[in-house]
Length: 210
Image: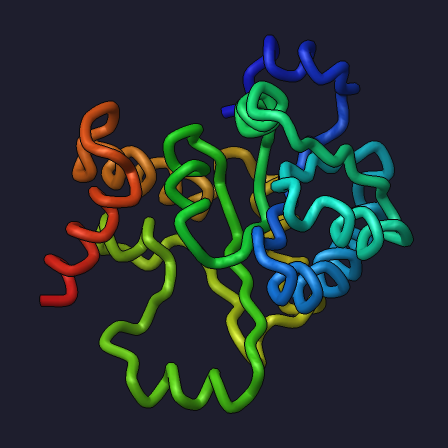
C-alpha cells in the first residue's frame, strides 16, 4: 500500500502513482520501454493525473532518459537509493520486467503486472526448456498464479493495459487482494529480514521446481 510519507518525500500529487521498471540492462530497456510507453498512453486517457516513477541504475540511466523522452506521461527518473526506497513506498501499482525486482515489490506490498520481451528464438528455447508455467518469483514462491505475466509474443500494450487499469481502479478487486495475500506469503516463506533476498529466492525456486 502506498505510503503517505513516501509520497510527500517525492512531492507527489493525488493521482495514482505507477512504478515503471523496464529492467536494469540495456537490452531490456530497449525492448520494454516502447511497450511501457504505449501502456501509459492508455493509462493517461483514464487517469490524466497519473504519476510515473522510474527507479533505475547509473549504467542505463542515460538510455532510460532517451527511451522515455516521448512517453505520454513524463517519468520521474530516480537513481539514488533513498529515492528508490521512497518510490517503492509511494507506488500504487507497478509494471515491471520479469526478475528479482518482483521480490522488492512484494516486500513493499505493491501490486504488479510483469512483462518481458525476448527475441523469438529465445522465447522458443525457453518454452522448450521450461520447467514451470510462470516466470514470476511471487507466483513461484507463493505457489499461486495471481501475478499476471505478459511474456514474449504476449508482451503487447493492448494486452497489458486492461490488467494494469484493473489494479489501479479496483482497489478491492479479487486480483489485487489475491496479489497482496500472495506477496505476504512470499515474504513469509522467504524469511523476510533474514538471509539475502537473492539467495533466499534462488533456494526457494529450486525447491519448488524440484
